Amino acid sequence: MIADRAYDVDHIREKIVSIGAEPVIPPRRHRRVAIPYDAAVYKLRNVVERFVGRLKQCRRIATRYEKTARNFLGFVHLACLLDILK
Image (tube, rainbow, N blue to C red; front, side, top):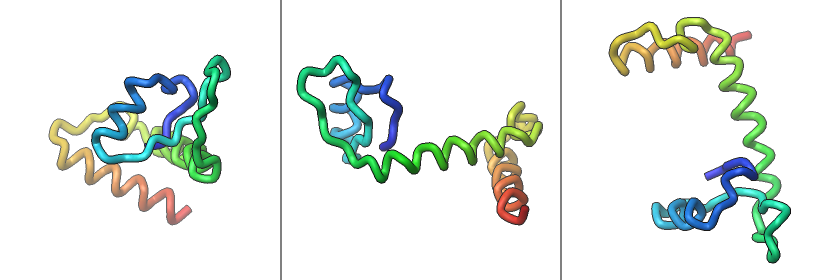
């Protein structure tokens, strides 16, 4: 699970490990012992955030006009497809 530096808290890290995931969170500067993390994987966070930002450019996705989760997911798939085809 990739998260921002603000989520570098021990109880959040423990929760991530308890569900069977690996936390990829850079340590905050005030930690006495820096916790290692995979910087190459952390760089992917930027790619995901930019893609979500592009999806939110679709007004229908940003405001969630659809009443059912199934229809909303269909429009998310459509918006992803349109973004890929650009």
